[in-house]
Image (tube, rainbow, N blue to C red; front, side, top):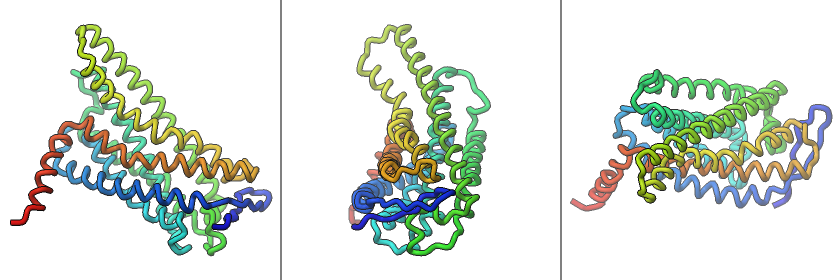
Length: 323
């Protein structure tokens, strides 16, 4: 496949930069297809199980919202796969730029905030196990979840509205070509907002889990527990959320700021732009693997979820047995 040409978003001059799209048009569609096929099974299975779990705790409320975000994010992947592989028509690329990609990022940051809230809930349960706060309330958790969805949606909505420039097969190669001048500025501003959200949640989770680790350590010292296997298992369970958060989302956010600089014309070197684009696509795929990691959190940390897995297996097996 021939290298594609894109116009950098330099406000002062129109600079054309050649980009070799062979990797993004072949390797990444295959990798995203793997995530989609596995993710659609795992997340719809998780939704089926959670549908039977009553929302009796703050933790379960946040997990249910995470499942919804994961399903929506999963359903955006086929559009990305078709456009990145070049199979879909150029009009589909317009849809991806204006709507599908925006929804993909919306659900990613909803997921990030929800994982942070789950970390906060685990922190409160460990540090103050016998006291209740205003956040330890199911109705309050539902309101907080609704605020998260509304805030992220309203922040992202202008990215859809302000991508209303006329699209042609030649201009649609790069999504920023569809944005108005205000749209490009809003896109840059939203990127900074998202970066702040991520790093705030990231630092908060480090503090939460450092405190949790310290609390667990002192409880072992106090009880003089010598059960090493149990100790390792407990530590693994405690840190599964922050491990998933770090492995999936940290690489992308390290790369996102310099990539945004290349989009808006601050970084003008063509070779560096290409490297940043490839790094961004790689780390974005890593971020998408969160769709496969979240079900691991459900199984390890949510006891009601685990209890219903045998029920699902038995119902599935009985449906396969002819009457």
